[in-house]
Length: 304
Image 1 (cartoon, rainbow, N blue to C red):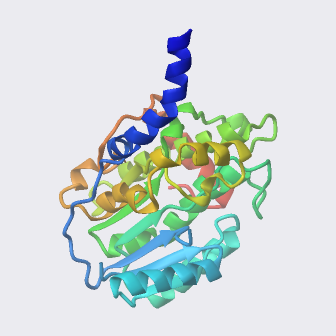
Image 2 (cartoon, helix red, strand yellow):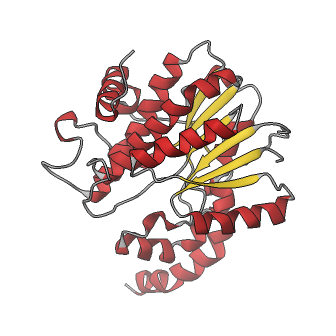
Image 3 (cartoon, one colour):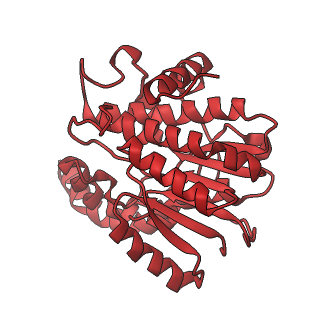
């Protein structure tokens, strides 16, 4: 009994001492690419929380401008632009794409990074459940609208930010909008599974086009993603010493966007800058193809 009490008393101290080593172990993936990007054009969604022309596509333009100024100051790259993009509104997505295509002749990198997590049941402007609407359908439409420009600019890449949480996800076609039953935590997992299925089907369709596609698990990152969950905010604070910084969390996305020789791995899922496991559901190409068709139908995109 005394031994157990002593262990409980010492545990916080042991965790504190071991925290640097544990954090290093949990965030050991580092993008080592030395690729230079003069003349390249990149779009990153949700970036309000090299030398390429970078478009920060985000809902909160004011926050985006602050991020852009910080990037310009740190990197010296003045070609960082902010554009309005609300992934919960297809009109906003189409307006962003129209403006971007009018301004730019090329697009080499598209990073679909934005997302919502564990928000109360709500719907997008178009009536989609918020998780599937923003995390999947919003990026599905954006990618569709920019796809011809990506093909014209090949070699080019699409990076879809997913999560290890996809393992708990299922695609319930009879309840895709969560109207029959809803769990905020599972809704997030379902949408992250959709990200991987979208990646695999898109990669299959783009074989030979010069456009490669990857999904990534960034790790547990300190961000505003958990703002809708009091429990998750408490957990983030309690285990903050083990959570990745935004810079560490960006490494795998950077690796998939920049590292040389990854084209042969198009359609793969990455974590800590290397190919990693996905669930059986995430490998089911029958579900992937059906989800593609359903997504096109919901968004009014003609089927191939």
